Length: 181
Image 1 (tube, rainbow, N blue to C red):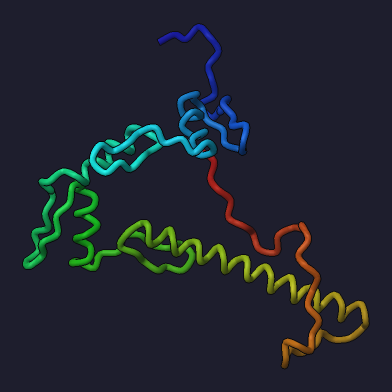
Image 2 (cartoon, rainbow, N blue to C red; image 1 turned 30 degrees about the horizontal axis):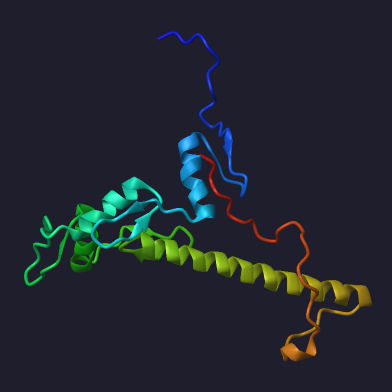
C-alpha cells in the first residue's frame, strides 16, 4: 500500500483538555473526558436509572438486570451465578486458591487485580515515608556536621529537633514513573 501524505505519529495526542493535562488522539475521547469536569452523565439505565458518561458503560451495566445468569459455578454446594465469564473466573479462584496477580515489589500474590492495585498504593505510601525518614536523617547529619559533632543518638524522639519541611529537591529514592504508551 502506498501512502501519499504525511504519516501521523501514533503517539501524537493533538486534542488537549483546557481544564487539566489530559491529552488524547481523538476528539471523541476528549468529549468523553470533558464529562469528568462537567459532571455530565447522558446515558441512563432504563431499569435502575443509574447514569453513565459512556453508552458502552451503560450497556455493560444493564446486563446485571437480566434475570438469567448464564455463568454458574460448578463447584459442589456453590450457588454462585453471574452475567460475565470474567466474574466467574475470578470467583472460582476462591475455591482453587489461585492468586495470579503478584506484586513485583514484595512478591505478595492476589486472586484479583483490584487487590494488587490497592496493595501497590501501600508501597507508594511506604516510599513517601522512607523519603521523609531519609530527609530527617540527612537533616540530622547536616546539623551535626555543621556543629562539628557526631550525629545524635535517637533515644527519645523529643530530644532531636525536627527537620524543616521537604523542599523540592532531587529525590532520595527513585520514584516509579508511569510508562508512556
